[in-house]
Amino acid sequence: MEKMTMRIAFFSIVMIALGLFAAKGSPAGEVSDHRLAFYDEYIDKKIEQIELEGMRITRNSPNSRCSADLHQAQAEFYAVYKDELIGQMAERDDIGESPTKVDFFIANAFFHTSPREKISSCRIGGSAG
Image (tube, rainbow, N blue to C red; front, side, top):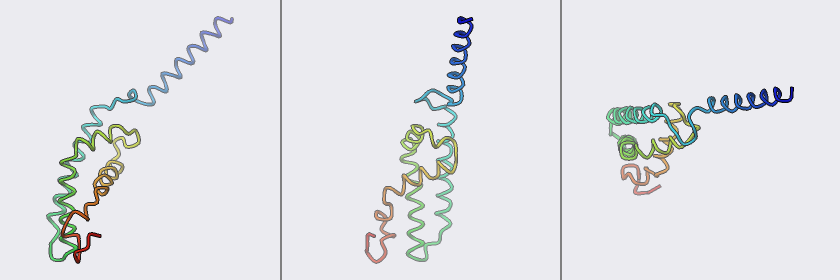
């Protein structure tokens, strides 16, 4: 009877461990090719979207020139740092394939570069902010 109890306990522990492993997905440190492809395609689409938005902005005022230049700088940032952004997102478990979370992550990365201070059209009245 004691052997049977030990086998059941062992089997239960193995099943729980397998269940936890399956629930987590891939082993730690591994990111699926599908997720990397999602990030790559998503950033490409975002670059295209931002470029189109920037082209639609009329440059009649200092604020609109700043907005258009910010769009251009953002699209360039995403293009130049795309591989780094993908790598950073892949290292995190909390982003996954959520468009909202990807948007937040890449926009946050861009705006942490203080783009308004680097774009002359955004320095209204000669002030760097």
